[in-house]
Image (cartoon, rainbow, N blue to C red; front, side, top):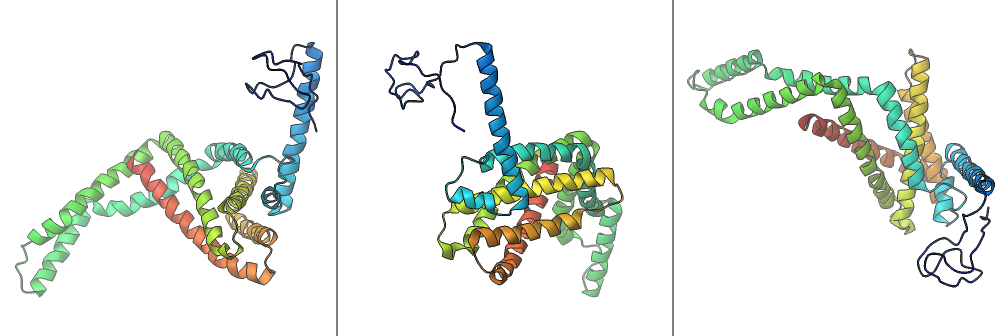
Length: 305
């Protein structure tokens, strides 16, 4: 919908004489639109532009949810004005996503991941060290060496025990300051996902390099896919909040893979069989990368807590 403009003859900012086609001043960039009008006109313009944006907004969400790959295809073809730009859409959805996680799903996130790591580190307590020393002595007796000679053990393993104890203390502090730790972890995870998006685009670039597409096309695919996954996880969180006995993790994974399959098929125009064959290594590479980045994110969150 074209904006109805009340144009000036001359730019009120710099005095440039407008031509009829000038919607903005070529000299200073100010919009050629007179806002010095009755409030009624401004209100009408506000609702007109808002309703127009709402139409674009809901149309974008409609195609994102119901037609995998459609928005990416339209963006790559240059048909962009009718839809919300990919990164703006991602930022908008991610704000609601991480808010939902912080409100309803972050407790388990902090406790389960940090607690499991903490349990592993508890093997560095004094009793465990004593057991290690005893085993070392027995091994020395079998080898014909003095049982009480632990110099090599001390040289080789004491430093690692000290480091483990230090890491253990970090985990304990991380669990102790639960609210602060949760916020830090969520912040780092949001950054992790922002890093993962272009990386997934690079994975697609490698698998579809024979099509000689620009990397930006693969990146837009990644942005739209992650936006859909965020919406799906938010819906899953809502379901689990309402029905506490339902576990949605398996369904989230399954729906994400089905969506990815049809999106790849729509955008890259390969056969169903070829798309299915490529989906397996693409999915595995993505999941391994996600796991590595997530573990690294948790570790960084703990070590710098």
